[in-house]
Length: 495
Image (cartoon, rainbow, N blue to C red; front, side, top):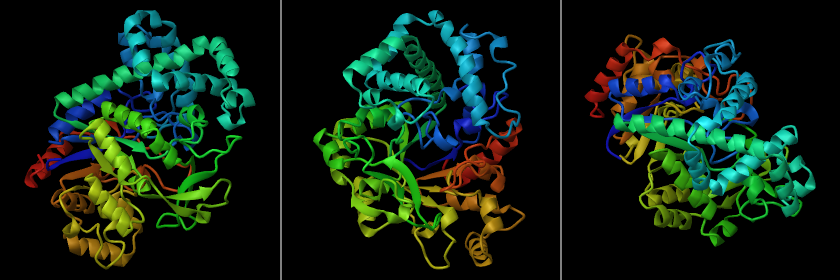
């Protein structure tokens, strides 16, 4: 990783008149904005479909792309839609917030119309896509059809025969839902086609895409349902989870975080040569240039909570697969470009594991001033093999932090980085990140815009509210802002 910089900006936050950002012209315009601002990286959140709580980190598939990101205008250009099919659809009334319910309900109606004209798509291309992705797409499409049949209930509440994937039940549902299964396959074909086009355009501009995947699969997903009996996830005979994932009490939550994802049986995964994981990382590295793995420390040790516990505080630490997994990954896929999200509770063994993996870790300036003593997030402690952020999707914005942090903490930040109101506290923090020794600096778009807590993307350990809803205004990505970012980028040798 050479010295560079980029912007964290999820697809959902791009502006347009259709309720949620898409792979359409506004995304191409943002790539142009990055080029004008001399940025070499575009970091996004997971592109997978959202489910419970609208979180991209709880998805019905670790491989599928979010149909909500499909651009309707591009479908019109292909003849798959007519303007009246989507121009007056209610995708939400607030241009600055995503209304996930309206998107979920109303966009599918539009996409079904596009599917009805699928004959306009070259049949050989669609067939080739299904063949290429058959190791996950077949189960995903059937799973989504079954979700509809069982009124969106989690698969653990389906009829026992299909929950257990009996051959007779699988045959029955595949025959009865052929058209629905084909719809979900077709929509993935369209989503992948649009995303690959956007990624190729960004790459031609000299921009590399940093993708993001959660370490765990969602408990209610095609991944867990199709693999529940394989042993790679910890399930009882009746397919109830043995234990689930979370994290212990920490800065964000006194009870810890009860994520609810079924944890892996790492011994069984090792027996398979980590096959599911190898396929998952390979797919991610095909979709992105770099992959950030959320909760990377879970490969060294992870917090395991007995299923049904009232809080995550009832959990305990368990050993992960360690460097054996990393070695198999590298031997299978070569020089993998992975960023390790190593935030949270870090022991010496976890730090050693990260160092031996060779992957760059993360530094967050928003954590540097919470204590008055020395800590790893202060820039003078960075080595080059790391990525520095003013904040991530789980942090408040810089200005939001300044409005809530204690007087001693904010005074420390001002003194350390020579912050003043004339420059703007957010620009001073950005300067601190860009001027550091870290090989890569990533700044959330909200901080470049100088926004407060109203623009925060997510508050950990909470569900609902305004999480994942923030959207940028079209005028925000201005020529003036691009020029200012470019000047600072060149000043600190990142352009």
